[in-house]
Image (cartoon, rainbow over all chains, first blue to last red; front, side):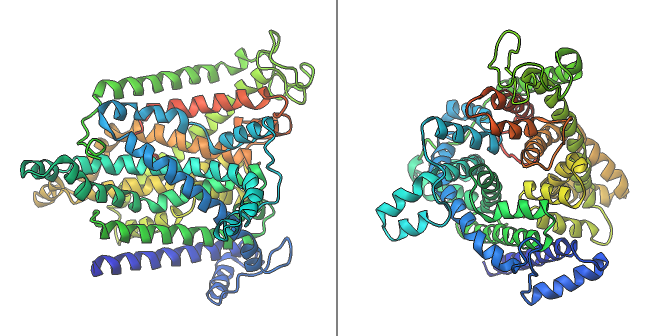
Length: 291
Length: 275
């Protein structure tokens, strides 16, 4: 475990370092000096937590980011809950028995819809059914939920539910896929048959040996699931006008505000790398394969 | 639980083969439609005032008209042609810089391959959509197909690299080295088998992935510019009107989804989504 922990920590640190270098290069795009010199200067600045200022607002890039990131995390958090609630049972269901496994390709029909098409379809339905999505948005739902504020939840839900559903649908596809993949791999293990021959019931074998493997497979894909949630968050923020960091990144790139774009990229990469790191360790602890 | 995790039996090659054949048949049909798009479309691309603005589907305009009176059916055909041609270019970039380079990189000297694998790991920690937007922002909108292809490269590279590394450490590789077969001969042999067994799957998986990325960057306004509108841009322009004129968004979206679906079916995706 220690060996794996050290190896994964080293990989994680190398990943963060690479993301920092990438952010420095992106940030140096706006500098007047040559790219290598500017990138080096930016690396040194980033190491001192100096993220520069926004070319759009002249505010510190870190302040812009701090203002927007919580709204994205709120959306991604809601999406993650939806993803687990939909993708988990769906993944198990589509691993269940031969007939249902054969039905798994049908999921392709749903997965062929790009996230922005799903978002627009939901927005159209909301318009048809007079669902008000124009209420105040960002950082309202989770605080209300944590404080048990029913009125706050009711006020925040209309604007929060649809974008979270869009993000969650994209995440659910990743969760379902990860579960199906790991269930298939676990089901192919030869020890399963051996344990049955030793007298263990199929339920015990699955509960004690297979279920942790499936969970480990899901955790091992945590980085991938996080990526799909953030990708979908960008689309949901754009479609539903959600004031998050993903939309800030798109606007920063469009307006060539490289300091802000670099910082958002670094933050997203760091979150994805952290999720992959935690997922890999947790998966290994649960008896999954060595990462 | 016991039934859930019962040892999976293959669903049978016939089902997989049927799905795959259906996907390729669909892609073939789309290729024919795209090839004949200028003949099939009744109006040239971006032809405004072909009819009254926002006319619903009718005999004259089967998919209706948009806000500027353009024939949506003709625009969908032209948009599909642009989307397919850009996606094909992006797919080639992904195959070359991801699938093939990743496979070959394992045998690069001085641990260059490991360095590239590390770089791919960093870039793979970013959503491909963000990577594509960044690359377009750093270059220009004309670069969108290449950017979408490059955005899919890290995952394709990692996949190919890891598979190639497994092959390089396999028994047949050890045997080849022990008997003095040159590394280049072994690489050529592995590459031939890789292309023979995995090329179509890689190509179709990449096609589906880059089409989604391309149409999404176009939806955000980072892709093609009029008069060469692709389906993503068509759907984005329909945002102004689609609450009341649903046909302006629905038909381009259906065409886009049909293309992605065919690519995914042709890849017979069931074990992984990444290119």
